[in-house]
Amino acid sequence: MPNKRKRIWIIALALLAFAALLLGLTGAALRKQPPAQVIAHRGANAYAPENTLPTFEKAIELGAHGVECDVYVTADGYVVLSHDGSVNRCSDGEGKISEMTLEELKGCDFGYSEKFGDAFAGTKIPTLEEFLNCVKDVAVILIELKNNEGGIAAKTVQAVKEFDLMGKVIFQSFDMEAILACKEADGNAYIALLYNPGGEFDKVVRKDPVGFCVEYGLDALHPQFAAMSSGIARKCAAIGVELRTWTANDILFLIGGSGQGAVGLITDQPELAQKLVRLPGFVRGFFALLCDAAFLLSPLFG
Image 1 (cartoon, rainbow, N blue to C red):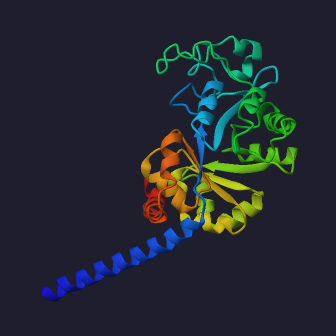
Image 2: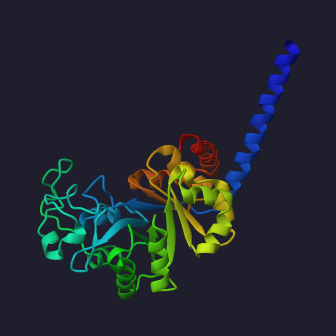
Image 3: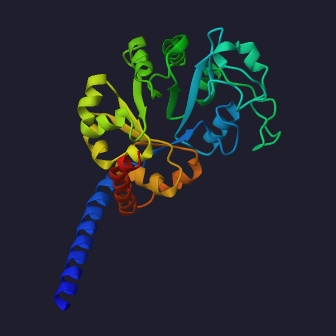
């Protein structure tokens, strides 16, 4: 019995020593790696209604490195900001954006809500041009296309070019055709694929991230946090492909995502994120190990 207990202690100490070595190496590497950029998801939506100009102005005020938005095309061909295909959830109006004109959309109030009361009452839906003018000075701008209906890819790329922001804007989507249409509209378009754990793209990326990115000409991968791993980040970095993870809101994934090698954290908590990404390398390394464990287990939970 004493010998068995001794063996258990030896194994435990060996595992601790190995973990300490990994953390030391990770910490050393992270000291050379700049903290991940903090990207405000639909703006600083904890402070103002999502995808409106006030929420992006607040994100800038809070010091977020970048902002993220979603776009759709109106019935008369304008690109506007909205996460949903309808105005029902985020305004006092009803209807599908694709079936409404810009004038009809501007007649809806996107500011009033139970969450914010009447503090932002009267806020209008922004056009893509109004958004770009508001955020043109931030470091990085993520624009999510839900699809390529109404020629939205070409329209969005054209607007970005008119504002001379091609070097800052990342065109992202869960729809591969939509981002490839952006690249077709302009070969310099920086495109990123959004994907979930357990989905078709996640399975392919886990198997061969480099081959997948090369095949489709991707500039970046934007996995949901449970589909993010240090191994994928390292392999992609070797060919110049960057990883940003979403929607990282809790402490584990805000610290761990940065430790895993994400260059950006798309988050609803930009204030908290800015503090956490600057933690010492060994702390980020420890949380990265936990996140990598979550990555390995994620297929078991669909």
